[in-house]
Amino acid sequence: MYCITDEQIEYIHNDIRRDGVAMEDLQLNLLDHICCIIEQEFEGNDDFEHFYRQTLKRICDKNLHEIEEETINLLTFKNYYFMKKAMMLSGAISVAALIFGSFFKVMHWPGASILLVVGVFFLGLVFLPLMAIIKTREADNTADKITSVSGTLMGVLFCMAIMFAIQHWPGARSGIYWLIAVGFTLFVFIPIYFFTGIRKPERRANTIIITILLVGFTCLQFTMVGLRRPVPQLPTYTYLGNEQILHSLRLKTNTNTESARLVTDINNACEQLKSILIKRELSTPAIPADFEQRDIMLNEKLVDLRETYETTHLLTDLKAAVSRYNSLAGGNKIPLDHTILSVAQEQLGHTTNLFILNSLTQLQISIAVAENGKEKLTALHRNNDEDQTLAAK
Image 1 (cartoon, rainbow, N blue to C red):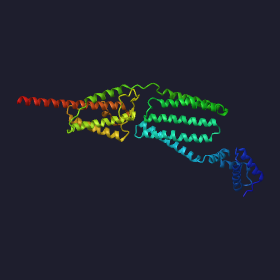
Image 2 (cartoon, one colour):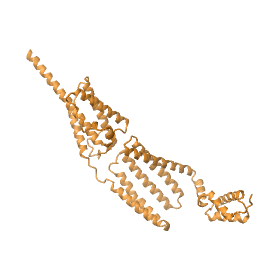
Image 3 (tube, rainbow, N blue to C red):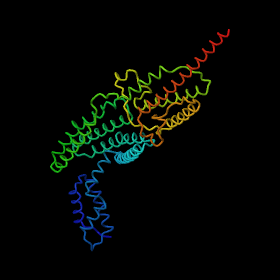
Image 4 (cartoon, rainbow, N blue to C red):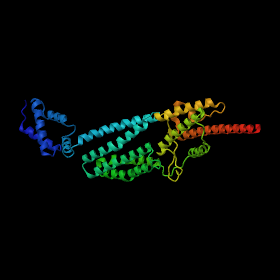
């Protein structure tokens, strides 16, 4: 065992102080730990300075001041390591969910919306707040703490804007949440970041470059925010007009016949599908009569009826009922061309909500017209029979 000298002990003690360790108890603990390693492993014929430096690399990555920072964090911030692990875990979950959610959405596979919501939730409400708490604890001055908090708040605002857009929650179509996030970034975070970093010569160049990038990307985001009131597209008015026509054509039929039961099944399936599509966009099963006054707009967007079991099952039942109805209708078959029922299975992900809504309503109108024709023909035959009976008497 090597016997360390007093001069070497003094040299190590002074070096620990020069390395930024100010806590006296920590200085003595580090000194004792390093001396024990040297006495156990150092061979007297080797270079002491070189062995000492190699020993320091085993204890810390850069300098001994890192150990003091970790010690202070442990003393003043008891849950530091737990929160750090939670931050890493939530970040990994959010990244994985966003990657798979984006891929699922591109491929129009079921579960894309759930994965994206989970990813945005963990990123905006778990990872970013934990990162802000840890960074503010580690920051040396108030300016850096304010920068960390404002940057985290900016990220949370963008995540919330994305969450509202994905879920089609109230206010998402007006772009107000995007506008709040962009406005906070331009007028709060970027000025704080710029004036905090520009004061430090070693960070000045990076601060200017990153500020330019932030302003550029934020302005590009601003160009995507719709400030004008959205105008309903022609397919929306077409759908509402078709609904009025359908309402005027509906009549009560004899449900004892197979044809009438099929009509009921077809109408029920169509109404359920329309209710699901409208609720996804407006969070209500039907478009209200005063939708323009209430700023409730039905925007045209791509949808995939294969995303959920309910819509897949309803579409399958609808196709079967219409096919059976046409087989009983003889020459008065319901036209299916250019409707959702004529779309191939692999192309269902390339149809829009308004196309589906209009084709379902037109299908109901065609059946209502056909049934009305049958009722009129039946009534005409009944009247003829009555006339013939009266004439015979």
